[in-house]
Image 1 (tube, helix red, strand yellow):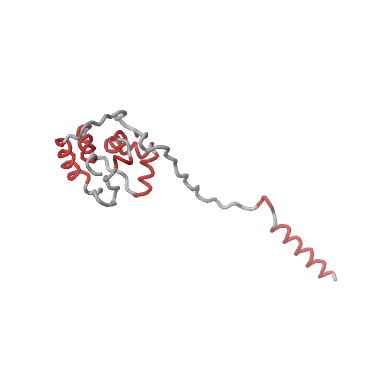
Image 2 (cartoon, one colour):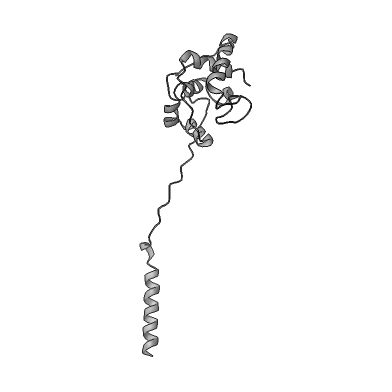
Length: 150
């Protein structure tokens, strides 16, 4: 009988210890990043030197210059008609503001750090936009070329 009582006491003790309530060890888990909400991408001007840009009629001279720059500097990562290392520029004028596009071209490092849309693109494509060190005029020519890609 003494053995039964001792066994029962031991089992009860083990049960109580194993049910320690709040004293359970919590295993740390990595935080799930929140998806940032972008209210209206056409109102997002991005981070960089371009704060305002007025577009007028398409300038064919700028388009031709922009195409040449795109072929020389951008084609390694971007394809006009399909997804590649980076997104296709086709239809970008309907997805992003002209200022955002210019700032992404001119200031990709800071854009990825501080702009929600740029961070989402980095997460989607897993490759940061390379800074090609284009001048403002060269970036504007590339933007003019993009305007023809509907």
